[in-house]
Amino acid sequence: MPQDTPVAFVTGASRGIGRCGALALARAGYDVVLTARTVREGDGLAGPTASAAAPETVAVPGSLETTAREVEALGRRALPIRMDLMDRESITAACDVALDAWGRVDLLFNNAIHQGPGAMDRILDLPIEAAHNLVVGNYLHQLVLIQRLVPHLLEHRRSHVVNMTSGSVRLNPPGPADAGGWGVAYAASKAAFGRVAGVLHAEYRDHGLRAFNVDPGFVLTESQKARGSGAHLQANFSAATPDIPGDVVGWLATAPEADEYAGETVFAQRVWKQLHDEG
Image (cartoon, rainbow, N blue to C red):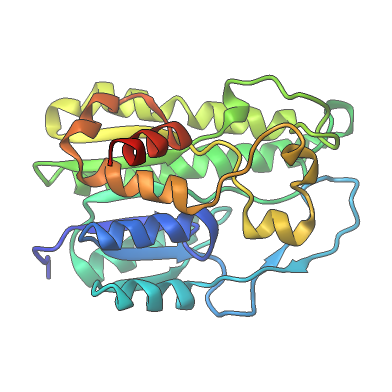
């Protein structure tokens, strides 16, 4: 049955920005639906992001079980659900489980991305199949999730969609993908996704829906640390910790003054600094 407490649906919640965003939303008073592929601690694996790399995986910390315990320690309910962004049926099933269990969703935080070969390929090395997978995971299946949940968000006087975007959408890389930059397939897939929040805002702002893009800046995540893939980027960009964009997501969900950013891109590190300077 529907409850009075607002519910946030968070993707990629096992670690990194998704985990930190989930905890920030819990602190802000939300019960949290947690989705990701890694259910149990110790099962997390990160594979290669370049097609030519050896098909090896490395262990990464984080799991839905761990994040759920952290949410519950904050006094909020947690509902961990395994979901694979590349599996359309998995996405719709996760939505069904959440709605059947709690009866409502007030906020959707689209944080998860497809992590696989192609993201860090140079153009001439990029298999079209890998580019297709990135578009499916980072754009098309995000639309599946939005189409499934936004009708339920619109049942409330006030609701939110927060989409995690990327600096690669607006910036040219400082170097090739394997030397401090990023691959075109990743950037293009995120660029397509980056248009969604503005359109949602135009279509549903009169129905109480606030839609935002969040550009986290360069954040050194557990997966990058495990792969050792962040070193080149650190040479060109200062790294933030995942809690910075996570905290900004919590602020967007609760602060009336955040409405001025609706339909726009919020630069998380800049906003976080402004909030803490004012505090």
